[in-house]
Image 1 (cartoon, rainbow, N blue to C red):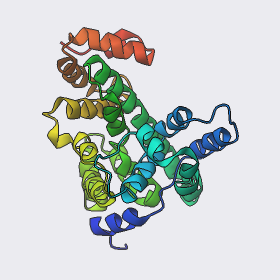
Image 2: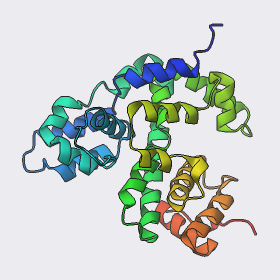
Image 3: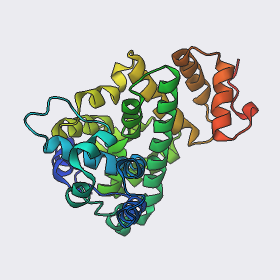
Amino acid sequence: MAEAKGLDYWVELLTHAELPVLKQTARDLAALREDDKRLNANSVAAVIARDPLMTVKLLRYLQQHKHKIQTTEVMLVEQALLMLGIEPLFDKVQPKPLVEELIKPHLAALPHLLRVVHRSHRASEYAKDWAVQLRDLHFEEVRVAALLHDIAEILMCCFAPNEMLAIYAVQAKDKSLRSRDAQELVLGFQLFNLQRELAQQWGLPQLLLTLMNDSSSDQPRVRNVTLAANLARHSAKGWDNAALPDDYQDIAELLHLPVDAVVTMIATDAGIACDITQPHE
């Protein structure tokens, strides 16, 4: 068996790789470009906001091409579009290559990748909603951080599909195995460490790095992102997942609400029966 590629290899490869985007994102952006009535910063931002890959592709470009006189870091899509301009976006941050084309030789990995993308989008919506409830005026920063919380897993599904399929197979065989342990077993490192290195190499905003760092979860905004990612990940395995009662308790503490109110809120958003999700006494 070939020796596993280490963390340094993947940091180097992904630091300079042309990041792919979802086919739907490319289609939607192309449709907007052809429609003068609908083409504006808000409509373009709405498309990009659904795709963690296009979002990080845009932020990486801005950071790598920022002007010397720029004193503030940009981590919001709308800000990036205002600074770059809509037409330059299409020319300089092109929505290609396509994820579906890149991963075509390993189609078995595509459903896993799309599930992580969907999970990331759900996490971003949870985090934004909770930030609004907490009267966080900069809720969009929290949303972006939650959207990109698992970007390393998405990227590795694109560039290392065989390794990621091996991780998912190990976890399917042993459901008690933590994700980070399965990653160590197959890759020799945790995806969080890869993500941290990439974010630094790409020069992503320090605030974004902080909000994505679960180890700083004593900060309320970071806690929001972490709990949103947890809820999206655990509920993706079914609303009877054993980890959910703890999630509800943690979210209740974050939002200063009774646990049953949190359960009802989440169940309503998900369109499920409340009794499915009630935590155990």
